[in-house]
Length: 390
Image (cartoon, rainbow, N blue to C red):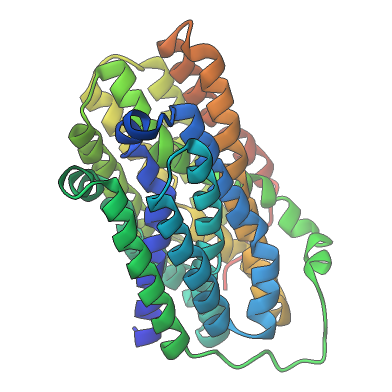
């Protein structure tokens, strides 16, 4: 792989880390600055919502000025600055503000890679390359689990965030120096996101894209910590280990999905099968909510594995997108994917908060069943989409 793509992959490691690390710091942030699970759910939701909102300007920037400046400038200001602000947080509001800024910094990283893949490599390899970037970059999910819990205990969570600010700023500088912009599409055609929104084929994919990442990101990035702590009284290091296992499952799932469209000769049915299993696994977790910690972790790992169909859905949608709208197209799909998580992180926090005082077990059952319903509704609409492979 090209050196600039390797560096983009490392930048995506940081992006994955920032969307998942709050779950591990649940107890320490509560004791140090009084940040409750609902506060962290809101802050996590802000990260995803800001990230999603940035996809429209990021898509236009990729098509107009290229991935080099788009990724490096935003990561330096948002990633480095946001992590530094987080390290000085003294109230939940400071965490929310920092997470929003970090969301801006992370917003262009994966899409810059996908833009390069779409413009520089054969279309038939897009899903595999996209999954490889997503899978390797998801190492950030692993770093956000046990290693973060360890670092928080050894050097404190504030110094951990300072180190992350330095890593983010240094990576951004490297992107500015190394990333090679691909040649622009040779066409006189012009267009905008509105042209993409007029395509009926994409509208059947948007709902599943909106809900696809919600169960895995919601559980891995936020609820795995409070759930294991409240129901099974698992320690911070134990939560880190469980998060690590789910993170490994998500990476394995991503890498498995990558070549699946070429192996089975279909994108649509690979996605349908995977997301149906996600919905059923969410219902299983709700039913067996307190049966045993090992069973719960195993089901959450299954949700992480089967819920990693993101690159195949992107590849399926990309096959309908004209070349001159590549940047806007992949970021529009990402807007739905990340925006769905952002909305549901906030909704799930309110849902859990309203029920937790009367019945903590029922609160988590309702939450996980809600994730299952969303997944199956998305699959139902997606069933009417047109299958297409390159």
